Image 1 (cartoon, rainbow over the protein chains, first blue to last red):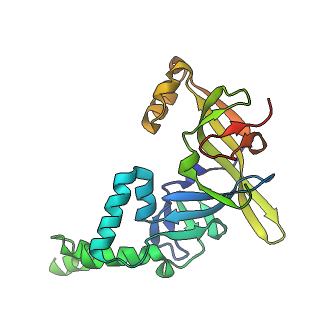
Image 2 (cartoon, chains in turn blue, brown; image 1 turned 30 degrees about the vertical axis):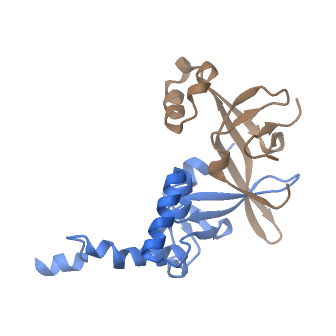
Length: 131
Length: 101
């Protein structure tokens, strides 16, 4: 039977928006169950808290702690309706704009507050200018 | 069970039992297809792949071990069974069961 293998083809796959920008990985998949109908693939879930739930309780606690310390207001979970999936290949293309997604806010926050403080984590253009 | 939602990772690795309570293996993969309807399209699960490792089943709780045993194939007694969605009872997703005999 041909079809999409959810674990092999979708789970943990790279997601790109309609402008081919990376917007995270498929951390989980939500299935809608109903009587006398096949389970429907409802949504792809993206975000640290979702991944933490897959790892275990200690990761969930760590995730909560980090959010509390960082005073992150967003819940960090993006729900992408599976109907928005355009193409499933090496990356999964979704018909959405990455800028409006919750996961982008978290990424921006991390870039601004954490990544930029790592020595050598400058913009690629800085390096080119120095050359 | 109408209108319930379950995460994929809650199903994967769960032991599936038949109507008589015997284990037939663990859920390893879900295969879905497109269902077209008036309002658009849905991806729906058509088939569950249930793998069994015979006597080594007790060791196969971890994904890493399952993949390793699958690779070893014949030596481990690995068998894969394809179960259509109609036969899988997910009333309790933590304890999936086969419908009928």
